[in-house]
Structure formats: C-alpha cells, structure tokens
Image 1 (spheres, rainbow over the protein chains, first blue to last red):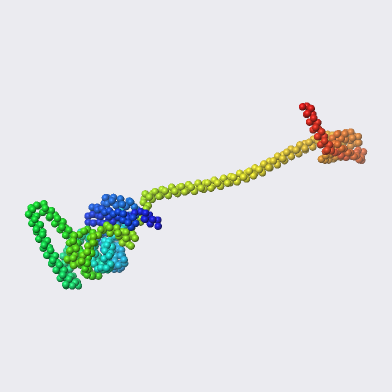
Image 2: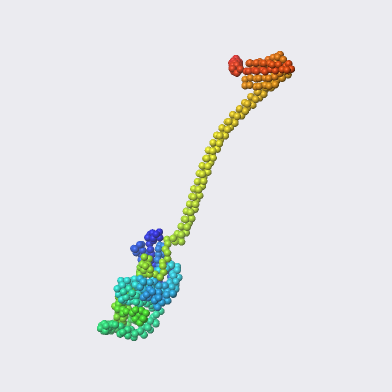
Length: 337
Length: 189
C-alpha cells in the first residue's frame, strides 16, 4: 500500500538496452503515471557495459528508485516452440538447461539459463530487471496481424534474424539466427537447398496459373534489370568521358557499400529461405504453406530483401519499421501491469 | 502478464543513504522517547515521594500535636507533683512540729490528721500535764479544741484530743492579712 503511494509520487524510468553487432543502443523513457515525460536514445560503441554507458544510465537511475532496466536477449541458444507441454518441449530443446515462458498457454519461448546468468553478470553494476525474448517482441508488435493471419513474421535486427510463423495465434515454427555465426554454413545450405526449394514449389499445392503469372513478372523484372544495366553503362561512359579517376574511385567505393548492403540483404534472405525450408521439411512442425510475410524492420533494410522474398519465394511482404528500444520499454510496462 | 525471463528487482525508496538517515533518526527518536519515558517515570516517582513526604509531614504534625498535649499534661502533672511534694513537705514539717509539741511526759498512741483537724490519742500522767504542756500549744494553732479523759488501770489517764480549724475564719484572717499588707504598702508609698 505504502509502496504504491510512493510509486505514484515518483516518476518511473524505463531503460532498454539493445545490443547490436558493434554497438549498444540505450533508450530511456521517463514516465509519470501513463504519461511519457521524456524520451532519449544514445548509442555506445560497445557491446558490453562500458564506463560511458554506465555513467549515462546512472544519471537516470539516480533520479528515481523506480527505474526498470530491460535488455533484449541476443544469445544464440534461444528460440520459440509451438507447445507449452513439458513433455513435448524435449523434442525441441533441453528443458533442464533452459528457462521458458509460456505465452497464453499456446506457445513458449526459451533461452539458456546460463545466458540469463551471463547477462545478469555483465550488467551487474546497473542491474537488470527484465530480459525479453525477440519472439515476444515480435508477437507483441504484430499483435493485430497474428490473431487473424497465417504468415511469417520476421524481426530484423542488425545482426540477428528472428522468424516466427503464426497461424491465427498458433505458433507453427520459430527460428533465431545469428548472421555472423551462420553465414557460411547457411550460404552453403542455400546452394544445396535451391533444388529442394524448386522441388517444394513443385510439390506444394500451388496453382500452375499463379506460377505462370509470377514467372511473367520475373520476366518483366529481368527486362528492368537490362534497362538498369544500360543505365550503368551510360554512367560508366560518362565517367570515362570526364576522365576523373577520383570520381571513379568514389563510385567504386559506393558500389562496394552497395555490395555489402546487397550481401547483407541477400544473407538475410538466404537465412529466411533456409529457415522456411527447414519448417517445410522438418516433421516436428505442422507445416502449412505461407503466403505472406510481415517484417519488423529495426535497421532500415533496403527494398532488396522485400524484392527477394517477393520474387524468389512468392510472398506478399509487408514491412513495418520497429524501434526496438521503444518496444522493449513497452514490454517492460506490460510486464509490470 | 509475465513476458520477461526474470522478475524485476524489488524497488524501494530506501536507498542506502536514506536507510542510514532513517536509522540515525530512528535511534535519535528512540533515545528521545526513552529519555521522555525516564523523565515521566522520574516525575511520577518524585510526585509519589512528595505525596509520601506530605503524608508523613501531616502524620508528624498530628504526632507533634499529640506530643504537645502530652507535654502539657506532663507539665501539669509535674506542677501537681511539685505541689503535692510541697504539701507533703509542709505536712511533714507540720507533723514534725506537732511531735515537737508533744512533751516527754505525754505518750501519743495514735494521731489522725483530718482535712481541717487533728485527733490525738495518748496517755498522760494527769490532766494538768496535758492542759499546760499540750493543750495550750494546740489551742494556739486550732480554733476549736475538745478533750476527753478516761482513767487507766495504773492511774494514768487516756485522752482523746479533737482539734479543728475553721476555714471561714482562716479565709477571713487571710483577707485581713492581705488588707493589712496593702495598707502597709500604701503607707510606705
């Protein structure tokens, strides 16, 4: 009773930490009741708790005793499973080593207990109140779509890709992939699975008419590519006519950046594709044909990924931008209720 | 609803500084309360002692009053004793004088001292010895003197002498003497 009175008197500070490939983003939200008073976001070039980051967070947590620090789980040994039954869980992972949370008694997400301890240890100086799974973020973010669609839901982070396939709130499949660790093997898998995918497409109950229509679109796209190539040639010619080596170098650099962006998008696409293949192949999962994809984009990917998914996998793709810091804060608020 | 893998830490407004502050305050308040209760207890004891002393004082005053009464009574007793002693001394002197009055030839067998008189029983060789040697001094002392004789076997006489002093005359004498004294004093002035 007394603590609730004090809680009402003090402002609450929600701090969310999102660890990316080479940096950490700290998002701070100061609330009074339900009203948001102030929001701040700061990026730190570290994946652990540095002194600067500690000082930055300390300035906020020293303001009020009612501060909540949340972090998004980025450990590789996590996932989500389409069951809450402890008997069936052993099919997917070792329950003795992991901690799981059952969501609406329909599906569960899990992570290794040791990972939770590692996170707690790494952030012991400031303390951690909440550790959220990307799958719970994903399900909360697409709450309006999950309830009434069969679709693949993808959370794109800087270094991770979380995939979940929901059929009217029932989880069918989920996968969490690290782009750095799984890149080489996944690429190999893609090459191997390309034929399988073709088989799957043939085996899948897709109308031939649809395939024809899609192949027509592909043809048109190819034609567009030819036009683009022409344009590139013209640029090259223009560059040669100007005879400016520097500009050529800059173009080369730009093209290298594009290549790396292209690579990452393609890498993400490959991961998604291989994961969906796994969903279709693995008998553990109740596989259904997925026609649409909802992407929660936390990094601002180019349109290439959408194009790949649409062209290569015939998915209807919808991209929605997500601010992970804000979403993690929302989850913390929801958890406190 | 629970979404997180871990439960949030318990939030308390009591930071370590505040805890220290509150502990100091609580100790101070506790000491103040203890001092207050000690003073209240002492005050109560003081009042109790005061009441006891007042009660004792009242009792002592009552005792003093009683003792004063006793002292007064004893003083009266002392005065009475002194008076009695004086009277006894006077009586003793009177008896001694009386026995001095009795001549050697007369033998007293019994003497009764009355409030306003004297009865003597004795033996005398004859009436003359009695009349001249004993009755004469007795008459000078007492106002009324009565004597009666009866013979014994050996020829001597047993006598009973009854002597009285009249108090009215004594008071008259005393008043006359006082007047005389006053007159003398006036003459002297």
